[in-house]
Length: 302
Image (tube, rainbow, N blue to C red):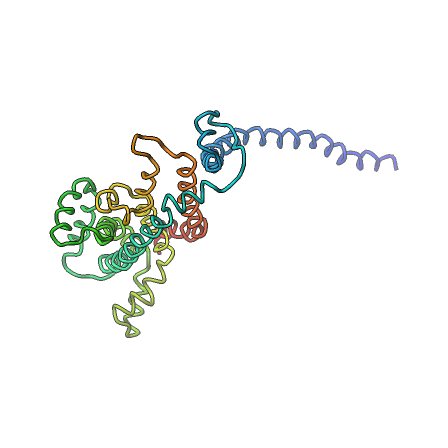
């Protein structure tokens, strides 16, 4: 009996000695993660505080903007600024113009860009490397250089005064990057898939529509979202070709909240910016998972 007691106490004593070590180890891990947590908290503050400040500003009156500190809360949460921005500020018209310019441009970019990426990467034909190089050259052309020649061309063809100059320009400027990205995504698709479809009797159009396009579907969503933000947030091209108030996009329309002598209606302006920002943010959150899958699709071959 006397020999069994120390044998039972030994594991217990060992556990008691290990417990402080585990506590110190957990405390050490938490201390090591503290800089990471502080960095994440700092990033959250940097990302979220401007949005919160924007939302609070959209409820302030003009007097609160002029007399109160920047960080002061609004006196009341009424939606007068949003109503004024939507009706008097014609935000509804600007949003409609942006949609009518963005959606056709986006459709043309995706259809033409995905087809060109498939033809340049999957199909084998003479001169495809030179054509791809021409598309890559288009990425390097600054947009400011093409505005004056395009404006002259649109004026001579009678397209000014419509949204067609915006649609054509957005499509032409968005195609080079789209073709390059889609050719990269098609490069990651195994060639054996297309060879098998050809052996089964599928035409090249059937291989593209039934096999190639579905396999890069997430990549298409990624490219479409990137191009959507480029077009939706554009100011330079829209200000050049759609300076008429009836054709203004939402980015140009935000300039209308500045008066003749520089007086800014801050409340309706902040409300209009909120409508613009949170509308696009909702689209991004809805397509977030597909965008992540599309970004990772071209990183692995085979």
